[in-house]
Image (cartoon, rainbow, N blue to C red; front, side):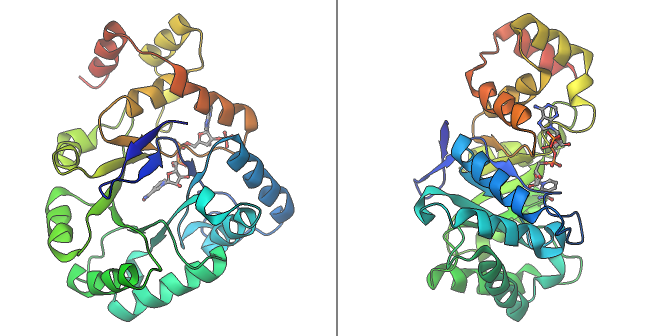
Length: 271
Ligand SMILES: NC(=O)c1ccc[n+]([C@@H]2O[C@H](COP(=O)([O-])OP(=O)(O)OC[C@H]3O[C@@H](n4cnc5c(N)ncnc54)[C@H](OP(=O)(O)O)[C@@H]3O)[C@@H](O)[C@H]2O)c1
């Protein structure tokens, strides 16, 4: 595994495991709990020690599965990110949501706690005092945001008593919004990691430029998509898979070297 530096000087794996759709989408699916718990443990042993989840995923059940899986490991050996939903961004609700997440995850702290989406109605001035308290009392090691634009990131930096660790946004070869709206540049200038979600979605794997470069290197297209992200300063990514072959392919992306010609062609995809 390769690592990048968080603002507090600690390290985070460049490749984490997305967990959306593991144990249900927006409602719990408990039919494969034992199988999925064992699979998550196998995935962690493969090297995916950073698990990205959220209270929203599986109607809270995904956190329960992650919690079951990590009991087989020393707590320090895994890095757990979870997220508070936008309807829970009020001061008291943040505390309540966090405590419920910790119970489901069977742990007394999360490594990274993100605001999943900004709320249209609850101001960040309600949210951050609770997040700051959660850092101070040790339930949260680092605070981050997700789906925030530059203005919201600036406001978050003013309200957060610790450095904002990451902004988790959709970013892939076919979706360059974080470049267009300045979020990537802002993150890079302020030492905030950009966590790219949905790195493989939206037709990335069948794009003709991507498949041609993959063919040239003799690798599956997903590796081109993942390497393109993580070779960028301050960018990490969290592809989701429950297919062990795909998971190994995605790890092997760390070994792929894209040359100047490849990067030039990939940059032009969006033109
Ligand atoms: N913050 C947010 O608002 C937000 C929003 C969306 C997602 N996320 C997070 O980001 C994670 C990743 O995003 P995502 O799940 O939307 O999309 P993704 O990781 O880009 O794509 C997942 C899909 O790609 C397939 N896949 C994975 N590796 C593959 C490979 N090597 N070859 C072919 N297919 C492959 C998976 O199927 P198999 O399982 O069959 O491999 C799955 O269907 C989520 O799980 C979640 O943790 C966050």
